[in-house]
Image (cartoon, rainbow, N blue to C red; front, side):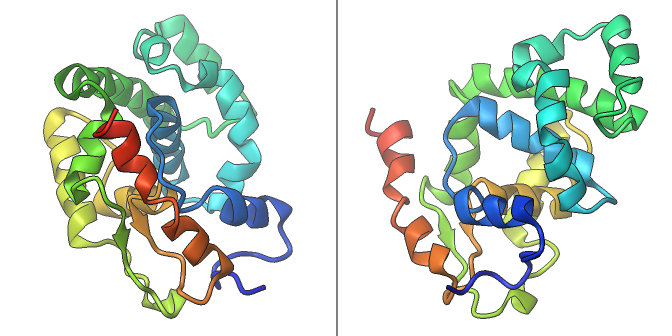
Length: 200
């Protein structure tokens, strides 16, 4: 069974993340907000660090309920900054709260964040047809476009590199290498996006 080369085969967390989640098209707003926050928290750190702390993040941030997060007060902020189970970086914590407010504004404008996000690729995952993980860039024009729009709307910690990782994670792009056993499996899920966001 061949996997993408970036997977650390010594890490159960990494293997599970790659085999069950990475690249699967996501249309659920709660999960999209969670991944946006986690990708922002990962900046400058390894993704494995975030994966290991993900359960703590879900608990600390009320299962990433964007409505609740957008209304966090100073008491809650201090609680988060004292939580050893998450990355206690004040800028990153405040960014998640700030981004939650923008996230809600986008939901109001587009009916859902998923609809807003998937329209960048016409509701069809972009198939990169990567043959080798070393071909993966740091960011792409698509990531730069989405990043610029989110920044214009008021989000931060959403630069092109972070957003590219986010787009890969939530399946907006299928960056599994073509020889990876998950490539065809993920490709077979493309219909989910249009069925959930357009046809319903």
